[in-house]
View 1 (cartoon, rainbow, N blue to C red):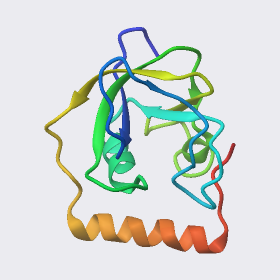
View 2 (view 1 turned 60 degrees about the horizontal axis):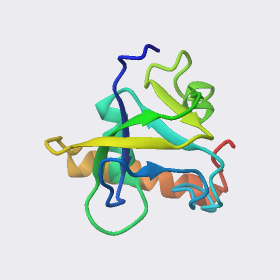
View 3 (view 1 turned 90 degrees about the horizontal axis):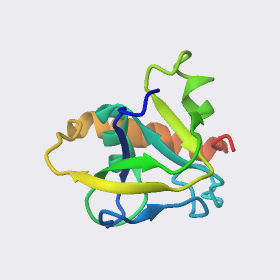
View 4 (view 1 turned 180 degrees about the vertical axis):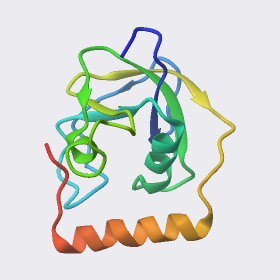
Length: 132
């Protein structure tokens, strides 16, 4: 990871440049307990999934963000699904500062999104929790 790396955060929250994305909100997965981390990615596809799968009303949003502290690989993806962090997904206990918004992005096809939503619901019913 270099200083020039662009990072994204997908959500349904309505944010503006300068806002901070901080830990402590309900997780989008499992029992929705308070998240000890905030998450970002260096790929648009992972950010799109974040925007589409986020809990909340309104449409998905993708923000360009910068970490304010150290980041580490997201073990929810890198240790289980995608060894080597091919999704370039990371987490931090420190806030991310919003520096902009990606306005023109392409959502996944409805049938692909539905399949992923069904899988997330299946995991929720099985009691699968995000790693903290």
